Amino acid sequence: MAKPEIELDVDPETGRWYADQMPMILVPQHFYNNNHFAIEAEIGAEAFNAALAPAGHKSAYVWCKKQSEVYGLSGVDVFAHYMKRLSQRGWGKFSILAIDPVAGTATVRLDHSSFVTDETRGAGRKLCYMFAPWLAGALEFVCEQAGAPRKLQSAETQCAAEGHAFCLFEVTPAA
Image (cartoon, rainbow, N blue to C red; front, side):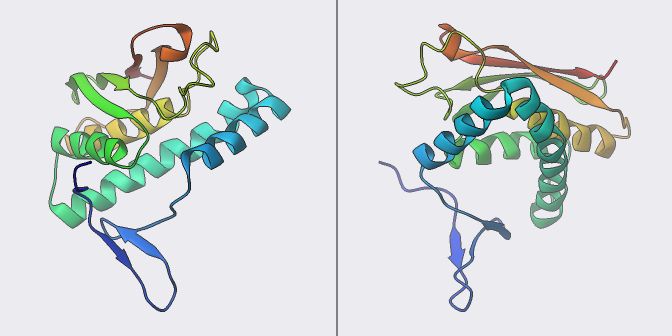
């Protein structure tokens, strides 16, 4: 296995992990997924998505803003850095297929989603919806930085758990 490109710092006094000057929590994938799907089973996927979406959207926006400041990134480079870091942190492999910050649009491919495992591969439904608001929030920051601020929305249009080879997301201006 290749050495990770992310440098981790651990505060010896608090035990808090940092990556890219942001505090992190490291948990096993099965632990996260078991909690995610247990809550989804209890309240339903739609309600769970509705509860998660605003926090995910805001968190992606804030992360991109902070990383822009830390690394001096701007424009599409911020969004690409976000996709790279999501990929390096175990969520799956994110690839930008198309992006236009002025129009507020992007198409993102996700291979090896952390939600599509041997246990969930045949779910027959979209499981990776949690990532959609992250993509919209990240691109909103980029649009704002490009002088074209706008509200965006994103949707998972296909999922590997439905039998597709990969998951696909479309980011568009909000209606």
